[in-house]
Every structure is written in structure tokens, then in C-alpha cells.
Length: 599
Image (cartoon, rainbow, N blue to C red; front, side, top):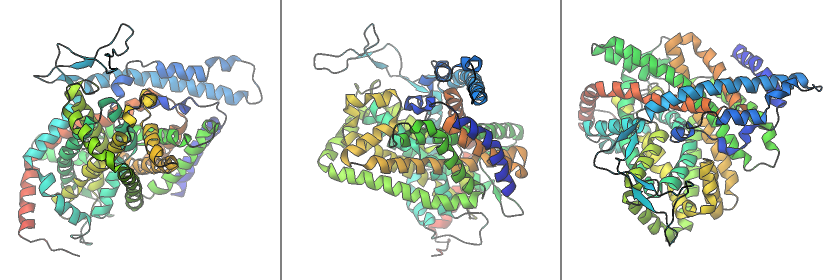
């Protein structure tokens, strides 16, 4: 471990020296925020919009760090300036390359799937592109002679979740009580194979999904989709519970236990081994490799650098002017904090997650409840706005279908149900019954989306922040964290400081869990002994997240997280009959009282 840490420090030292000499970082502007949400995680709902101008970030970087500095007279620190200019130019070239890849990936993942028997409703715009208002100041909408559309990636996840919910006979409802009992340790057997308890596995998975998307992404969704997006977000979370059940049951069933007790599991294993049992091994192996490559890319960007970048932007709102010049200090601190945990592997990650996740969720939900109590008289109106907005033909962002898509999109990118990432965390739980861990996993989308995301939505609606035109700059800058902070701070003065701490904890917990996801996929491709090399690479990206301004690189990573759902859903559908048989057998034994309650 010491050698690994020394290697990481050796690699980071030049980067630290480079960052320490840089001018005010272009990242200081929160408007460079990327597609938040895989993860997540990692919220990719704005990726399509951000890809319309792939040269924007490059130009911005060039203005901040002009290439001409290399030819200007050198001062005492001339060499550092030249190195910094080289760094920024290299960053720009990589960013431009990723921008080209993004156009292709977004063209596939965000391909507009038409919805039959619907019409597209859009804001009426004048010649300058501004919304046309009626005499009362309300936006005028017009019906287009086109069907409403939904992005392919969102459509893929929704169809998959709906299919699984029906195929598993609404296990998300029938198994809810049992899930709570199992998570509470009622059926824990210390002699079962595995590395962590049911509760620790759930907290590890939740720490990867409960993140900035719950605070930032939901706020933007309400501002753009209106209160009605909340309703569809809850529906999507409800359906996503079954997707998590299916993938985590398979993750447990096809896991491999090493001689030293370490467990290897996840989508890579049920895709290769499970589909191999169906006689399509080569296809399963190809899907497994594709999933692993996508997961590694997503873990380094959306699950890592993006989290550092966005949490730092939120923290800067509470710091004095000039703090943006020392972003690299935050990068060093986060690198050390993450390194202390991930070098110890899943056991240390799980122990950290079981403490951080309940704490941060509790603080955030408690604050939201306090606001709801203080605004109790406005609660009925808020629920009315949510219900009416869900089906309003004149809702913001293009009618009822548009609101539905906004809500589903936010939930899908927040809880990662169907992406396959959570199966890696749940595969290491101690249990002899794969279905039992699947039942535990279905609590993830409920907590992440139905509870926490809904709390954020209610705060935004009840405080009226979504109607405040003076706050539209938060939407333009895609700064959802700032919007939520403003809404909460208006009711609880000084809460922005507490929220800043919560944002850091959300980001930190997401990073340590995604490091485990990426490490397991890395080990699947390169062998178990390669794990430490991945952890070092991960720590390097933690630091880079505080200084790198390559927007397209981060967008590319988030698109890779979305891409994980393609091979994963294919495998889940093909293996769904197998899951159904296992579920029926387990449920019959459970209902007959065969399983002994341990405590």
C-alpha cells in the first residue's frame, strides 16, 4: 500500500506544481457545468444540448490561457508558464477529439424516438428566438405537426423497467416489507460467503447514486419541466426498483468467490456466464467487455472528476473572492481523502459508506422536512401544482409528454436503475440467496428518487423558486446546486453552508463507490492483480477534476455511463425468465416460513 501511495504522489507532484502556477481557472464559472447525472452520479440530461457547439470549451480555454504566452518574454517563472500553456493546449486537443466522439454517441443515445398519437408542443418564438407572451404575460405555445419524441437511452430504460415490473409481478411492491427486514439484518447469517452485510451493500450502491443529481439535477428539471416533472420522476423511480432487483439478483447469482475470500461480480459476469448458459457465449462475452470498458470510462469522469468539479463549484459559493485561484488545493484534499478509503478496498468503502450515506441523507431530508413544516400552508397548493402540471397540455418544456420525459429522464439518470453499476456493489453481500440481495437492492431507487429527489422537488415548488424569473440564470448556467441552495437559504438563513458540506459528502461518497465499480471492471479485463494500478489512475483523475476545464471530456464520460444500459438491458431481458423462476422459488420458501429470522 505504501508503494502504491508513493507512486500516486510521484505522479501527482508535477500536476500539483503546474496547478499552483496557473492563473484563475476557467472552471471558476459554474456555467461550465456538464451533463450531470450517471450517475451518476452523473446527470446526462443536458448532454444533447451541450453537444451543439463542441468548440465552445476549447475557445474558452484558449482565451483564459493564450497559446501566445509561450512566445512572450519569459519571467522567472517562464518555464512554468510554458508548461501550463502546453498543458492547456493538450487539454484542448483532447477535448476537441472527445467532442467529435460525443456527436456520434449523442446521436445514438439521444436519437429521438417518436411517440405515436402525440403532438409536439413548443413555445412560440419571435424572429429573435425569444418566447412570445400573451396579454397576461403568459408564454404562448403552439402545436407542431410532429410526434413528440423521447431520447433513445431514456426510452430504453423506461421500456426495460416497465417490462421487468410486469414480468416480476410487481415485486417492487410485494417485496418492499421483506426488503426492509433483510436490510435491518433480520436474516443475516455471518457464515454466508461475501465481504459485506446487506446494509453495507445497499449503502455502497446508494453512495454512488445519491449525489449531486439529487440536489442539482432535480432543481433544473423543475425549472424546465415544471412541478409536473415530480410526478413522473416518482413513477420512474417506482418502476426502476424492479430493474435494480433483476440486475442485482443476477449479480449475486453469477459472482465468483476467490480463494482469499474476495468476491468478483457484476454485469460483466452475468453477461458472459449467464448468456453463455443460453448458448450465446460469444455475444455475452462481447457485451461484458463493452460494459466493462464503458464503466471504466464513466468511473473516471462522471463518477470522479465531474463530482470534484461540481462540488468545488458549490463550495466556492461560500468562500471569499479569490478562492478560485486555489482550486488545486481542494483537489489535493479530495485526492488524499479518497485515497485513504479506496486503497483499502470494498470493506473500507462499505464501512465508510454506511456512515456517510445515512448521515448526509438524514441531514438533507430533515432540512427539507423543516422547510415543509414552515411552509405547511403551501403544501396542498404544491401537490395540486404537481398533479396538474403532470398532465397539463400547456406545461413548460413542451406539454404533458415533455413533462413526462423530463421526469423520467431525471429519475433514470439519478438512480441508475438498468445501468448495471449497482450489481457490482450488491454482488459482494453476504448471502446464500441471490434473490434476497435483489430484494434489498430495490430499496435503492425508492430512497434515491422517491424520497430524496422528491424532497428537493417539493422544496423548489413550495418556496416558489421555480417561478422566480430572477433565478433563471441558474438554469442558463445549469447550476442546480446554486438554485437549491438559494431556495433553502431563503427559508433557513445560513443553510447554504450546511448544503455546501452536504454537497461535498454527496460527491465524496459517489467517488469512492464508483472507484470500486471501475476497479472491478478493470480487474475483469486485466486480472485481479491490476486493481492497484486502477486505483492510482483513479486518484490522478480526482486531482485533475479540480483543474481541468475540458467540458467535452466530461460529457464523453457521462455518455459512457448511459451507454452501459445498452448491453446491460439486453442481458437482463434475455435472462429475465431465469430470474422469475428463482424469485418464485425463493418467495414460496419465504411465505412458508422456511427462512429463519436470525435476530
